[in-house]
Image 1: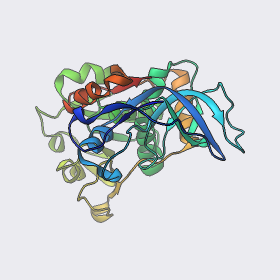
Image 2: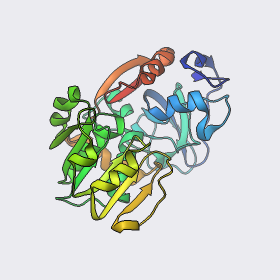
Image 3: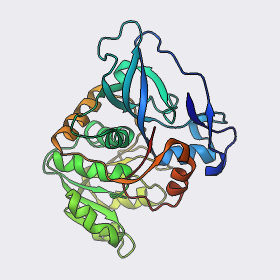
Image 4: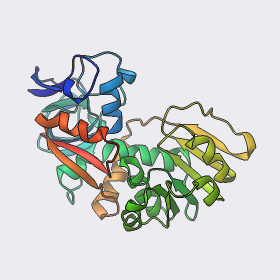
Length: 305
């Protein structure tokens, strides 16, 4: 089968299409024929710096949408021919930028019939991150005020939709040119991070989702009301603490079958939809990474297989 492989760390040019042996599903696993796979910031960061994966060789990609080709012993949840989507276990279950992947059957949920594979392939990692940050970590409740940084980004724009589906009042940072897009998602107050200091313009927020890092975490503490929570999705020096009447958490996404079924239900109802920035065939994975490296992606990049 074809896979996108790299033998060294570096720029997009290190990504090559190679032929590798097709995997076989073990007990409780399924073999999925990949139809589409999202490309996330974690992909181009691992490509360049290794990250959790260390040194190559490896095949990147955690998002999957495809068709079950074969099931291992003990699998009852899916059958050959089923359309499924999900996130390979992060970070070490990587490898979806290929024609086939294997993973535990409960990694995947049934693909919503209302969306195609490109849409489904864009959702898993970013939507799971948003869900686990908002629902599991922050405990989002109806009527709460929340601030989402980089609200037009891959995780951000899905977090907006999940928050609105749960009755939140949403503020979101983005450049002024993306404010109409944010309003279309349901953002109540777009904030131009280039024109104003959000830490001065925003107050009395219950939840902050920080997808940027750097000084955004410490500055965000100033906008939280007592009892508020800051969830950081980047590994930063902001320590988890309950000081000053607020809580901070640093979170990495985890595989979660129950959350995937909730995400699927929102997508089926039309309440959750990925904005597709660009689509590339598998053989143009390097071009997809070049697009990601620009830092100007709105929504998600997807590879088709």
